[in-house]
Image (cartoon, rainbow, N blue to C red):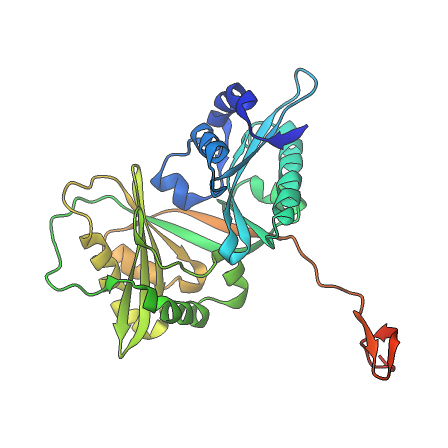
Length: 315
C-alpha cells in the first residue's frame, strides 16, 4: 500500500533513508539529503509548497518498503524527483518497489495538473533502465565540474550585476535562444532569484542579457547554473571567475558547476580556472499528458442543435 507520508511513517523513513538514491544533483551536492527532515517539513507545511513524500509499506513481512519524494515547480508545470529509497542497486526486488513508487508518483502528480516529471541519475546507473521501463526518456546529458581550491582574490570591478525583476524578459529570451526546444522540458526557464540561498546574476551587452549565472549556496557546497549566449563565449570564463569571487576566503566547501551537453564548450573555460570533471548525469522526463486524438465536437453554422466534428469532410 502506498500513501502520503504521515507521522506513522517516522520509523520507516528513518530506517530506510540511508539506503536511498538522490535524483537531483544540485540539491544533493549542496545540501546532504535528509529525507526524514524533508518529509516532516512537507507534512507540517501550511502552504503546501514543501516536498511531497509517498511511502510504500509492505503488507507482508519480509517484503521491501520504499519512499519517494518530489519537489513541484508549479509555475513551470512539472515536478522533480529528489529522492527514492531503497537504492536500485540493492537487489533486483527493489526494481519492483521503484516501479510501484514511480507509478504512484506519476498518478498523484498528474492529479495536481502538472504535465511531466523530471529525474536525474548518473550516466552509467542501473536506474536508467528502470526509469525507461516506467516511461521516462533521456532528454539532456550533463557534466558536473568541481572546484575545491582555496581562494584569496577579489575582482575589482563587478562584471555581472544582481538580477532584477525587470530582467525576467531578457533572461527568458536568452534561455529560449540558447537552450534547444527538447532540453527546455528538462530544465525549466530560470527564475529571478534575488535573495536567500539562491541568487541570480546577469551580464549585459548593448542592453541585451548575454549571460545568466545562478548561484545556490548550501552547507555542503555551492552550485553554479550557467547560461551563456554563444556570442559571449569569450567572456564565459570571466563570468565563472566573477561567481567564484562572490565567495570569501572563509568558504571551504566545494563549488560545482553543471554544464549541459548543448553548452559543452563551457567545460574548457572551467578547466582553465581549476575545475575538475567530477561526474556525468542524464536528465530523464516522463510526460503525464497526451494529445487528444479525437476531433472536438462543435456546432455547425445554421444548425445550432446539430453537432459535428470540426474537421474537413474529406479528412
